[in-house]
Each structure stands twice: as structure tokens, then as C-alpha cells.
Length: 226
Length: 121
Image (cartoon, rainbow over all chains, first blue to last red; front, side, top):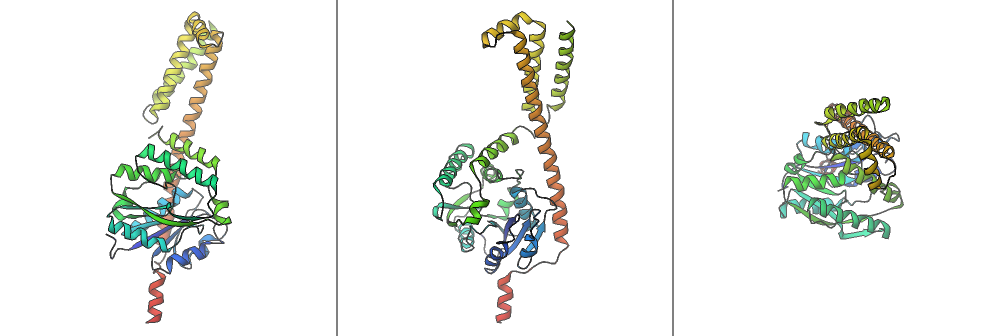
């Protein structure tokens, strides 16, 4: 499915100057097209990323969901056959992109979703594990998708799949929204084992229990208006 | 009587507001309509309001009307929040359009691996 297709990796970044050059470099060295969406950073993230990637700059900070949608739009405009979303904080491995793209071809599927629980994690705390498990149950109940890891930012989608995604949750609730849209699209999906390597840096930037409540409120509020 | 008329005018305004909001956020509109109608009923049939208040464990009918008014205020606050979200979606679309237009004006970057292989070749 992905043979000969242009693979674009979308990285949403906000104030990631200390790690973005390394993350982008690792992905770009594997031959993928990379677009970094600088979500209104004030620390020179865009300049660091520009050495190895196309950079799209939001004039103001909008949130990771908004940045990912911008990146997906950009990739589609550039003729992407496959769009991959990849975190900027260094917790994902560039080597896993190939496995996701292979899953699109072999399943075949329009969405390949990374799972740290089918794969492995480094330095995942018990509290975070429980939070992720709760999110997985919530998503299974609300979308009907049979997944083991619902808040993993490492995903690949075919062009047809990417065209079905229209994120309106600007902040962290986009991870649940994208799964709801995958379920609504009716397109085939697959889960792929991936490795997540938490560092002190990525943990500091990660979500907390309070964020989970905000996500639930965002998802609820979104249902109240058109 | 003066208070009843004043409150009724305010509740009628809530009904008008709810009617206007019905298309955009139907859930909020229906909640407002139900609360405003309940408020009107309790305002003009206070003896029922008192029995209803006793049944609900509130005590006085006037307290029940007050609680309904608080509910309406909260619903309107929720609606304001939803309006802000709608505005944010418009801002997002605008920012995205600007960002993508600026990016299109930049020269395309080739993947790094190809550059490496060219150097090797």
C-alpha cells in the first residue's frame, strides 16, 4: 500500500529547542520527508528544526492537536502517500516508523497505531500506566475500537485515512478525537508494537491526572455544539 | 407582583436567548428553555413552588426559584464557554491558513538520505 509513496512525518513542537534537532535528524536520516509544525515557540525551535525539515510556523500557540492537523494538511498538500505523526520530545524511535508503514501495507490498513503495551516502554511509572489503561478503557467504550494503547502519538495513516481526519480539539483531547474519527471513518486499522523511551524531559512535558480531567471536559463540551 | 413581573421579563429574555441558540448548541438551548419555563411556573404559581420545594427538600418556594436562576446562570456560562471555543476554532483555521501559506512560499527540503547517497555517489 505504501510502496513508492511519499512518506511524510509530522512533528508538532512547542518550545522543544533542546531536543528537536536530534529528533528531526534521526527521522530525516532514514529518508523520510519531515515537517515540523512550530506551535508558536519562543525558544528557537523552528530555527533548530529547519536544518533538516520543512517548518510550518503557527503565529500563536494553539495546541498539539491544532499543530498535528496543520502538519497533516501540509503533508497532504505536498502529495504525501503516507502521513506519520511523531512526538517531538524524543520518546519515539525513528526505527518504528518503518514497522508502522509496513503494517499499512501488510494488514492492509489505512491507520497503523503504535502500542507501547504490545511493544515496550522504558521508565513508565505505575501512575502513568494506570492513567493510560483508564484512557484505553474509556476509548474502547466510547469508540468501539479494540486497542491496547489509545494515547500513543506514533501513528501512520494512508492518504485516504489522513483525508478523513479533521481535528478540532486543539489541545490534548485530540488523541481521543482522532480515534473517534478513525472509528467513524470505518476504514481498517491495525496496532503495531512500538517502543516508548521516557526521559526526565519527556515526562516533564507529559500529561498528568489534571490533564485527563481537562480532556474529558473538552470531549464533553465538543458534543454540545456544532 | 412587581418582583414577579421583573423576574418574568428576565425569564422571557432567557427564552428568547435560548431560541436564538437552538441551532448552534441545541443541548444548551433546551436546558435553558426547561429552566426558564420552570422558573416562570414557580414565579406565577408560588404555592406549587412551595410544595415542589418541600418535595425537593429545599424548604421555601422562593429558594427554589433562586436555585433555578442559578442553574440558568450556569447554563449561560457554559454557552459562553462554547462560544469561545467556536471563536478559537475560527482563530485556529485562520492561523493554519497563514502558516501553510507562508510554508508554501519556502523552498522544499529534500529528505536527508538522498543527499547522503548523492554525496556517496
